[in-house]
Amino acid sequence: MIILGLDSSAVAASCAVLQDGKVIASGFINTKITHSQTLMPLTESLLKAAGLQLEDVDCFAVSVGPGSFTGLRIAVSAIKGMATALDKPVCGVSTLESLAYNLLGRNAIACPVMDARRGEVYNAIFEVNGDVVTRLTPDRAISLDELGEELAVFEETEVVLVGDGAELAYTHFDGACEIAPEQIRFQNAVSVCLAAINSEKSKFITAKELMPIYIRKPQAEREKEEKENELERKTNL
Image (tube, rainbow, N blue to C red; front, side, top):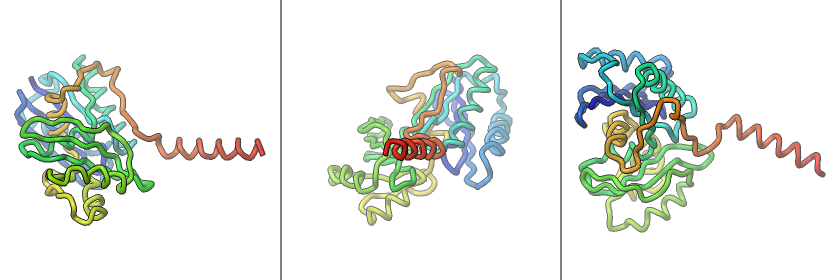
């Protein structure tokens, strides 16, 4: 089985192609160039380098959130387009769960962290035992203080921070947790594919069913609701 995965949930963009669970091509771009300019050229070049045609792909995987609203939409739209054209199945993967797969081979508590702004981070906690990843909490937005309290129960187990918010958390926790080295710290499409293949909750669906998952509403929508609520409050005075 050949699976192609994409991730553009944060600043970095990546693409990977796995065959029967083994990585045969992967690419990672961590620049400030918009994903709409980099993601598809990266995908095309990887397939060409691997000697594959898009038609050779059996299924697709993509991180569907949490993450950048624009970034998520770009990758999801790209996957929907390719999968629709080929009538192939897709799997939407939690960005946080895919980050836990960065630590395969370890025996540790994986703590993916993404900066959610407004004093919070996107987070979920996972236990990694070799090649098995077990989810311990749902995906959520949480303050670093609250997260620190939760992690205190793992004082006898190694806790490893991953994700683009790992450095922020590491500083906040004053080095109480380990931070993953940069080469395995960030969101990447290899782990998206591994999560799609190995996660107990993975489900392949049609391209039409694939949608981004936002833990919080987009900022524009939140601001609109706040203005409407304030207007209603003034009207009722």
